[in-house]
Length: 325
Image (tube, rainbow, N blue to C red; front, side):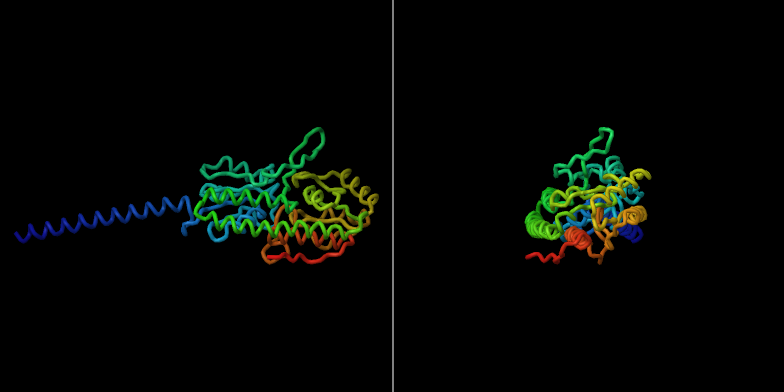
């Protein structure tokens, strides 16, 4: 009798262990399932392709979201080749924000092929693009839409709306942060116009490595007088192209031309030497914000740094940007 009682007790204990183990496994499975859609802390996962988009998204999203940027500061989106880790990040995302207009062709191709179910938003394509002639009758949209702070406002609004759709409970937070950022961008826009106007009128001409400043030029009243290559850095300039640019620089009489942080400056240095002009001592941020701690490590600081570089090199008078918060 005692043996039967002990056997029953053992059986009851084993059954209890099985039930508890099942509950524990079920709980773990539930946590793992949630982690595939949200970060461990419960925040929505947002992936931004470019450093510019990542920065604007962080400003609007604040602490309510987890932002992962695929490109690092100084990386050229035109020629970037994705790595396996990029595929994993895209598959785990709740929302993917990319520039569009074929700025980041490698990432766009990977994104379209990924198995994730995240919404994909081409933030740059909320802006009506400039159409640039690549020659031989080929016209393409210019992807460098962020060159104008007014365009950046449209991008911020698109990011805000996408985040609200993703996390409706944080609508007020996203709305307030977007309003504050928009206020500062409007001030930046007006300040940049004023800064460029300090450059002598006959010197308001910009010569850069690649054709990334058309929106900036049109918004702020400075002509794009020449570029070494077109809108994509995949292009390789011929000797004839280099020589034509040298001759053009001599004719227009600009005091300086500009290199860019995402492109090897060797060839534009040669152009400057042959044309007998100065290569501006500071490089322009074109397709990426600067590394953390640099003078261009946010979108707003990037536009300010570029404006300072242009104004000082072309004979204007630079006054630091001081927004009213």
